[in-house]
Amino acid sequence: MRATRPLLALALIASLGGCGVNTIPTKEEAVKARGADVQNEYQRRSDLIPNLVSTVKGAAANEKSILIGVTAARASANAIHLSPEQLTDPAAVAAYEKAQSNLSVALRPLQTLQEKYPDLKSNDNFTALQSQIEGTENRITVARRDYNGAVQDYNTTIRTFPAMIAAKTIYGSKAYAPFTAVTPGADQAPKVAF
Image (cartoon, rainbow, N blue to C red):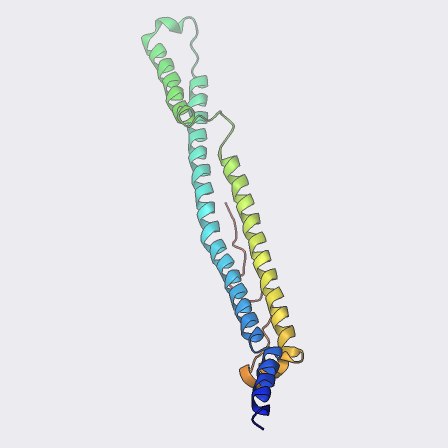
C-alpha cells in the first residue's frame, strides 16, 4: 500500500499536468494581454488622430493666411500702374512703392519658411496624416487579429480533452468572445474633416 501512494500521487500530478492545469491560466492571460493590446491601439488612435488633424489644420490655416496675404498684396501691387507721365507725381510714385512694399512684406513669411510659392508644406502634412491614419488602422487590425487568435487558442484548449476537465472542475473557465466592432465609441474611426 505504501508503495502505491507515491505512485498514485505521481499519477495524479501527471494527469493534472496533462489536463491543462498550467496551460489554461497561461492561455487565459495571453487572451487578456491581447485584449489590452487592442484597447491600447484604440487609445493610441483616439489620442493621435485629433492631434494630427489639429496640426495639419494649423499648418494649412497658416499657409492659407500667408497665401491670401500674398495674393491680396500681389493684386494690389498689380492694380497700381505708373504711366510715364505719373513718374513725375510724387504721390503716384509713393502709392506704387507702398503697394510693392506691401507685396515684399507679404512674401517674407514665405521666404522665412523657405517655401516656394505655390508649393505648400501642408501637402506634406496631409500626406503624413493619411499615412498615420492608415498605419494606425493597420495596427488596430493586427491587434484585433492577435486577440482573436489568442481567443481561438484558449477556447479550443478549454473545450478539448483532457484540458476541458481542469477547465470545468478547477477553473470554471468560460469561453472568451472574439473581437467584433460593435461597441460604440472607441472602436469607431474618428471623422477627419477640414
